[in-house]
Image (cartoon, rainbow, N blue to C red; front, side, top):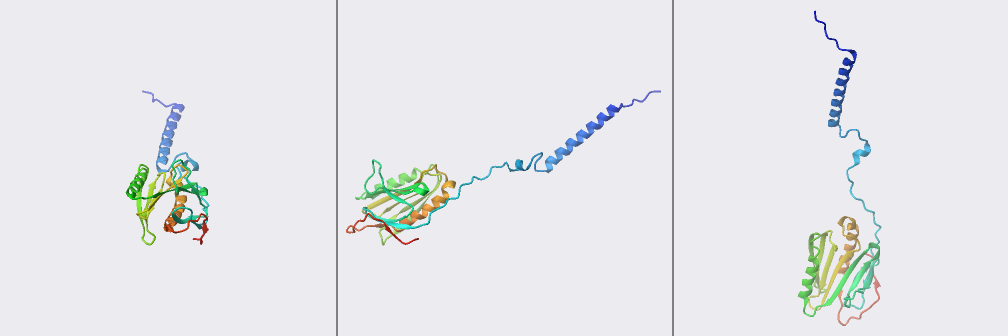
Length: 230
């Protein structure tokens, strides 16, 4: 008569331990599939990158003064800006820099007497604007036409991370031509400068809307005059 092989107590315990271990692993894997994360805490669930935040700017109140210096044009500028003569070595008379100290930007203005060569200045303006196409997401042109003041031109709205986001030119088509280009003294970044750009854009449009060519017999004044609040 054959004897039955009996399992020792430690063999039985080992089998039970292996079964429990396998069941535990299966339950852990199932929980990982059903739950959004395993073994993590609240901090682990917020590792996704957050949108970049920027400081909120305190922008000045909009007030304007009349700029009427010894140049053949006049217009209104913000009280928080400062007009300076261009001091570069190649500067010509009535080349100006409208500084925005609190906004860290400059509107560069270059004036030319046409002398029958308006097409040359138009081509030069198009070339300078086209240089920003590499970084620009698009360039929108807006027509300026005021027959009563003989003020004609284009405003260039340059999208994307271009170095200059707004440029323009104005002319009377026969004698005068002026070009403007806005630059900020920071690395081009549409998101970071957007609030300031929107603020200054209104000032540039106001300047264009109030722009006038002086008559030849008009006396030239160098003292800005304060005008009503806008």
